[in-house]
Image (tube, rainbow over all chains, first blue to last red):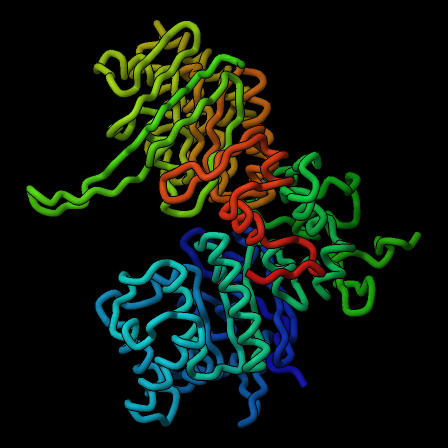
Length: 332
Length: 273
């Protein structure tokens, strides 16, 4: 039984220059205790997809009518798309679903102590008393490896270092015992040594609490280290998805291969860095057919990909790529 | 021993932290750093936030005051003692030593055309005699940086992150410098574009005989780009070695810790910090 099912999610934004497509026909499922990596470059729609799960996109976002997001909780199913009133949305905003962001400094209120913010959200989302909420918050700060948690509880966000702040953020997100955690580039602003600690911590917490995590990142190595499955996004569409080992070892889509070839690899310093040709197109000039076709060096002029949108084809069990069936590697 | 373009001995940079008249507190951002950068080298400086790598780069460009120690520049034609620079020296030094910034969105004025952005240092330094000469020089360097010459009349907002970084590289190189400090110049770019900019820097280094100091927090990028690596921690140099040597056999514990923390692309090699 899956924890969340996303089906045909499409999101557009109304702007002064016109309608911009941010996410198009994205579908995925996540089981409890599973980590799904959502990988993509700027403009890939990975953050908009994640924010849709909490309906956190700005008011100019338009969800296509066929979009479905279903959350399966012990208390019954929740149709996220149908949530309208702020009161109803509490369940996906800090209740059953929590989110951690890239920049913890921007996510804590600067003039309120960390403890007060942690207690406040517990009072909203749980039946705990103020005293119990305080005890739980200090316990959570301790669990994420913050030394002297009782002292930190009374400090402000600016008094903590970057790594400590991100830990406090994780402690706060997890204290309501969410079923689903959305982590949006949680380690991007951190130094590598701190990043390694935070990634370890998140893996431990998945094992302990059995929650599902949607892990958004631009960094394929971070995905290789944390995720069970990965979905590679480009210009709002999923280009390839599957078990992380399969996708990284046997990438079936030219875009995934391009990303891997552009990445500096420490075990082969002589490998040339091959950029993906061209630039990410402006959102106002969305390519026809396969959105990646103008930058795909493997295509011949006049190919089907210029006009027809390739379906997600299963290339090996559970491993899908947006290519036509005749282009599945190993087939001829 | 090749000729050192940049040479420092026990270079320190301190910043005042406030405090009273008699108990002044200071932060030693760069602490007794001795380094030699040979002409034509591509030297990487790595370290975590607060390691002093940016301050070291700024000190070598004479953009922050040097507190103690010595630092000099010698390209065979001109010499500068970076601890004793007059206003005239500084002007001359700017022609020789330039900086490429991290954020290609913040570094370019939105109100200037690409042509004017690249031409500005030439005009300010009075390096060209006429508008025609400036234009010719702008076109030459823009071509070297693989910018579309038809786009020179456009404004920066019309360009993507990668193209903007090519514009700021062209601007830094317009005055034909010898020494270039690139401070996290690919950190804000997507990976597919990062590779393109790194390849461009390498080819410019060869074509123009540049000496690079490449400051980065990303060890894999440094491993692929630089021939020599300096590791900094708390303002000090912890270890420095040719790139291959350093990555194959790090000698210091801190370097080992840093290398171990780099996430591997191999899902079967999951490590613990």
